[in-house]
Image (cartoon, rainbow, N blue to C red; front, top):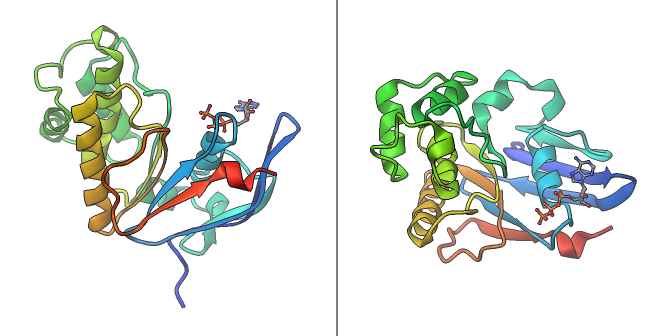
Length: 211
Ligand SMILES: Nc1ncnc2c1ncn2[C@@H]1O[C@H](COP(=O)(O)OP(=O)(O)OP(=O)(O)O)[C@@H](O)[C@H]1O
């Protein structure tokens, strides 16, 4: 039997000497969408950071295609797109410049592709203005434009719906569902309840896994 795309085994996470969760297991296969739920402070962001290889677990391990994350740098960058809670956007750079350098870290993107992605997220006409002049929702949209540029199969998204208006929320829900329908995978946190759930949708409630 082949390994799952992403797997967590016996995962424990301690922060500031507090055990947030332990013995946590999960598996992700193409088409899966996993929503991490739970109260404030239950460890949702911490779990996403563990799955993205940005933090080391207190116990257990995360495997990407059967191999420990820690052993995989190039594969990780090719397979995984991380969009954190903070939009990660530099205020002095334009939307175009922000996306150029964010993409350059993994897969450089052509200017035309960047402008098309910005149009997809409703930012036509805002490509060349410094991001500090954009609203919070528009800055979030700049960060989310990466979901139209990066072919990584696994998206790990921390509170992607934050600051989006109703139309933006609906559009992002559709885009995530389409990604899963095409064989991609999404792991995300949100306090928002999805109105569109693909077949592979599951929820993991950290409130129920508290140590
Ligand atoms: N950088 C850090 N250093 C030490 N402790 C941290 C750090 N970041 C978070 N924590 C602690 O870890 C716990 C879980 O935080 P985390 O951000 O993972 O929770 P969360 O479920 O995502 O919360 P929220 O719903 O408020 O976003 C909290 O008690 C928090 O104080």
